[in-house]
Each structure stands twice: as structure tokens, then as C-alpha cells.
Image 1 (tube, each protein chain N blue to C red):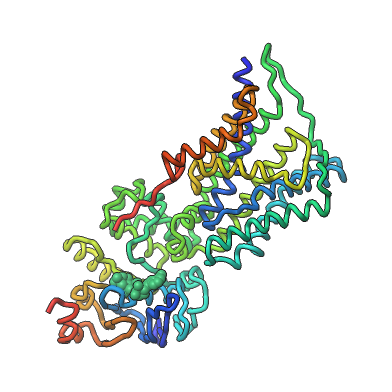
Image 2 (cartoon, rainbow over the protein chains, first blue to last red):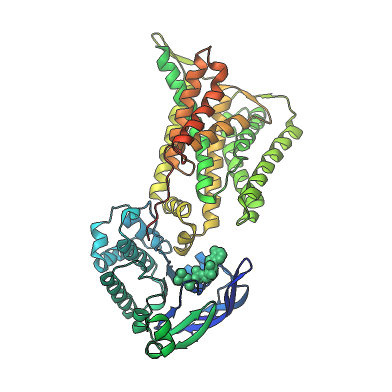
Amino acid sequence: MALLEVKDISVYYGVIQALKGISFTVEEGEIVALIGANGAGKTTTMQSIMGLNHPKTGSIYYNGERIDNIPTHKIVKKGMTQVPEGRHVFQELTVYENLIMGAYTVKDKEKIKEDIQEMFKLFPRLEERRNQIAGTLSGGEQQMLAISRALMSHPKLLLLDEPSMGLSPILVDEVFDIIKHIHSEGTTILVVEQNAEKALSIADKAYVLETGNIILSGTGKELKNNDDVKKAYLGG
Amino acid sequence: MSFIVTFLNGLSLGGVYALIALGYTMVYGIAKMLNFAHGDIIMVGGYVLFVFISLTGQPILAIIIAAFLCSLLGISMEKAAYKPLRGASPLAVLITAIGVSYFLQSLAQIIFGAAPKFVIIADLGVITFGELVIPVYSVITLAISILIMIALSLFIKFTKTGRAMIAVSEDKAAAQIMGINVNTIITVTFLIGSFLAAVASVFYLLKAPNISPTFGSKPGIKAFTAAVIGGIGSIPGAMLGGFLLGIVEVFSNSVPAIAPYTDAIEFLILIVILLVRPTGILGKKRREKV
Ligand SMILES: Nc1ncnc2c1ncn2[C@@H]1O[C@H](COP(=O)(O)OP(=O)(O)OP(=O)(O)O)[C@@H](O)[C@H]1O
Ligand SMILES: [Mg+2]
């Protein structure tokens, strides 16, 4: 049984159909990449999985359990969370308070403290800025914070929506190293990217989304060598 | 010397405005709506006090019952009238809120009639220091409202639910992916706002012991003005706006030549502040970083 199964979902914004019946699966332990151009429907897919929007048709299963009709906070409790597109850290809270928010579903206060120390080991720059208001962090620091905030809930499945957006090349490498590290610790990953090169090089499996349809799928390697993908997403 | 007493009375009225303004501002920040029926919760609180003081003669008991029933009313109002409109246009929500306001006022009029009722919670008198004659009412109102505001600030800063309130007001979707149940947070917000309105009704009746169905309108409008002056959505803003308006009102009323224009002066301040700072004094512009 797949950890996540998206089955033929269609999503509309008013009369605009953003997803036209897409299906894919994420197996436990995989890194799965979803690539596609602007407006292809990547974020919409992520939000459907998180319960932030609701497919008109189709269904989504997590661990065999249907989740497309339950509220977001319940989905999070099942062991899934998201690093949203554009970070969405809580601007008025400090770095430390943002991490505490990330642990909203964790009851054990001691554990939360330990986890925050873990995050500071993973992202030493956040420790230096622990009492800084998150809105004043640089874009890269906010991305680090958004990732570590998501990890605070110990997700089994982590969704990352364009984690490399707006980052310098060095930081992009750093973020992808971190994604590999998180994966190596046992977290299953679904990552949406415009940086197809990077995403495909870490992905076990990948899907190409184009205007609401999945037009290609395969292993990361296969898609990286696919001529159409090369032309459309890898700059020739 | 009378300046000191006037100032104290201004702070005291300001404290009451601040308590009511907090209800407006918290609901606005978290549920993103203007609850125009908020003032009417004060009115309901007043009638509950009237009924239970008449029945039992126990003001403290009546206050506890009023606080409880107003909180319950706030929660029910949200569940019955506003929750079904989550995601509807702001105009639909606003009109519904006005409808709820008329509903509560009409209900009060049907039950209690249009003529004011007389309620004495306590006769507090004055204390004198040499030439200073200070109404005890003012001191108690100011002290209790400051205590409540400190407690509320600590609650928001240091409790899990309080921080969740900040998170929801700032970014609802991000709050949801933290595992926060937004509906619960909205319920808590209405509960706190309505509780504060009940406290305000006690202070109003301590000052002037008459209650009528439109009793909540004026404090509602004034406190809403205070919330907007301070920056709607901002908790410190509501407190600042409340005190500012209270002081202006009491000083203006203390000068016979300008007393008739008090309301006009207050709204003029609102207009000037909005012209200079459209978000209110402490209202914030969204910082966005991509
Ligand atoms: N809230 C919304 N209301 C109306 N249309 C929307 C909304 N959100 C997305 N859309 C539309 O749905 C389509 C898919 O958008 P989506 O954000 O999922 O794309 P994306 O693949 O994430 O793009 P990007 O790479 O630019 O983030 C787009 O045509 C977009 O305009
Ligand atoms: Mg997107």
C-alpha cells in the first residue's frame, strides 16, 4: 500500500479547472518530485493533499485512509505536513516561537525543547537568531526556518513546495542537502520544484505536470534523460 | 487639581473602551470580520445583571452569571450566524452581523420593553484626599481593566492557545498546517471578546445604572472607533486607542463650551489618524519576503 495515493483528482477555482484528474503515488521511504512550469497546478496539488482545498472529484488516501474530506489540522495529526510555497513563517513571532508553533501537535514539552536543539544543530544560523522576529530574517533564513518548523511535528510525509525558490545557488545546494538528510532519517518526501535539474537528481520517482495534467512519469534518472523534459525544463 | 481627577476618569473610561475594543480587534484579526453585534453583548450583559440582581440581590453572583451567559452568547452567535458564512463575501458577513445586532435589540425590547430599567450593582461613593474627590468607581474600573489587559497579554504571549491565536490572525493556512484547528481558535476568540464585553457592562452600570435595548450601541461605536484608531487587528492598538478615546472624551466633556461636540471631536480624531496612517496607530502593513 502506498503511503500517499492521489486518485484522479480535479480541482476548480470558480470555473477555472486547475487540476484535470491527476493520479500518482508516494511510497513510504521515497523522494518523489513533481515538476512543471508556472501555473501547472503544483501548488494546487500540494494544497489538495493538505486539505487546504477540496477536489471536486477524485480522492486522496494516506496510509489507506481517505483524507480529502477531512480538515487540515486532522491531516497534520496523521503525520503529514508542508513547507508552503513562499515559506509563510509567522512574521511577528520569533524564530524560537515559530519552532514552537511547528510542534503544535506535540504534547511533550521536554521533547519540544530537545527537538529545537536538534533544529539548531541542523541550522546553526537559526540558533544565532533564535530571538529575532521571523519577518526580519533573510529569504534563505526564512526557508530554513520553514523547513525546521515543519520538522518539529515529526512528519512521516513532508511536502515541500518550491524549497529553492528565490535562493542563491549555494543555498539551493544547501537546501537539497538538507532534504536528503531529512530523507535519510526516515521521512518520506514529496517535493515540488521548478528547479527540475535539482529535483530530478534526488528523486526516486518523478511526475511532470502540465496545465493540470500529468504528462510524464518515471524515475528521476529517466526523466532527467528524457528529451522532452530536457527541452522544456532543463534548458535544452 | 481637578485635572488629576478628570485624567483618572478619562483613563477609567478608556479602560472600558479598551476592553470592548479588544473584542472587536481580536475577532477582526482572527475571524477577519467586523462583529457589529459586539456592542449588543454589553446590552445583554446589562439585562442579565438587571434580572439576577433583582432576583437574588447578589451582585457578585449576577456578575458571574452575566460573564458566563455573555460568553455563551458570543460563541453561539458565531456558530449560528457567522460560521455558516466562512468563505462568503465580507459584505454578506457584515450584513449578517448587523442583522444579529437588530435581533438582539428587538429581543430585549420584546422581553423588557423600550423603557430603561434601573439596576444598582453597588454604590461605591468617593474617596477624598484633601481637595481631591475621586470616584471609587473610576479607580476600580481602571485597576480591573488594566489587570484584565495584562492577563490577556500574558495569555496570548505565553500559552499555546494564545500563540495559536497570533498564528491564525497572521496566516490562516500556515496555522492550519501546524495542526491548529482554526474553528476552535475562532470560538475561543469570541468567548474572550464576549467575556470582556460582559465586564464592560458591569462598569457601565456602575457608572450610570440604567439599561435599555440600545444600551450597547454607543459604547460599541466608540470602542470600534478606538480599535480602528489603534489599528484594527492589533491588541496593543485596541488598548492604546481605548485609553486615548476615553481621555479625549472625558476632557472634552469637562469643558462646557465644547462638551456638546465631544462625539464630533472623537470622530474627527479618527478621520485625521486614518488620513495620516490608514492602518491606525499600531496597525501593521504586511511584510512580505520572497
Ligand atoms: N486561489 C486561486 N484562485 C483562482 N485561480 C487560482 C488560485 N490558485 C491557483 N489558481 C490557478 O490555478 C492554476 C494552477 O496554479 P498553481 O498555483 O497550482 O500553479 P503552480 O504549478 O504551483 O505554479 P507556480 O510554479 O507558479 O507556483 C493557475 O492557472 C492559477 O492561476
Ligand atoms: Mg506553486
